Amino acid sequence: MPTFLQFSTFQEKLCDLVIDEPRKLLYTVSDKSCIQCFSLGENGDQTIRVASFSNLSKQVHSIFRTFNNVEPANLDIIYITPVSDSEGGKPIHLMAVSRGGMRYYFQRDQNELILKHARLPVKIHQVRMAFYSRGVLLYTYNEQPGGHQVYGVSPVVHKMRRFSSQNPTDTSKLIEQVSQLTNIFGDYPPYIIDEVPWDKLTQHALLPAEERASRNEFVLQHSFRKRQFLMLNAQGLHIVVKHQPIDDLQQLLQTFGLNAPEVAV
Image (cartoon, rainbow, N blue to C red):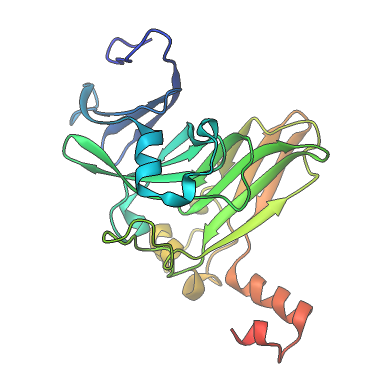
């Protein structure tokens, strides 16, 4: 264990570790859901603790009343990932996923991490692993019967861009699309999830940067290929493709017809 990591007890274990390269920060989280943030210095050769967060259960229940009925074990953090400035909206620096599928959004303010927002999943599962990339969250869980399943959560464009500082429990501006993949893994869960970089899919001098494209999916969806995610398990490599807005419109037209109110909305 690196000497710069300091836990409150000997029984506390390191759960996840991630580097925020643009900001030159290192985040760690323990199995007690204690988060530490370290500055790596200008050259990446330092480890200076600059912020921390603890007492997750107490803070969650004091701020978010909808979490009062959640079992404490489902609140524990198992995955953390930095959130880039290019995703827009109010600055959020870190996102965490809990064992039950809850999501926590943190902002770093000088020497502390502030819990700005939290979201309940559609259904609480025992999450096995998670992966986040530019607004899209994928996490796997084991459901019997049916084997290992995958949930995908992505923002509806131009809606999930801002958190309310006056009321952190207000979710009226957070509109998301949830997808479920079933019966593709069976008893063989994925070990690794990653995204195929857009620059490997499309390269053209006239196309905008992918950060801009991810914030303007309605406008630029015809300029870029669909986002692809790779999932590796014991059976092989699975490729999951994220739908674009035009795909959602096509499904609505095929399901309800041209003049249906679902299409008009």
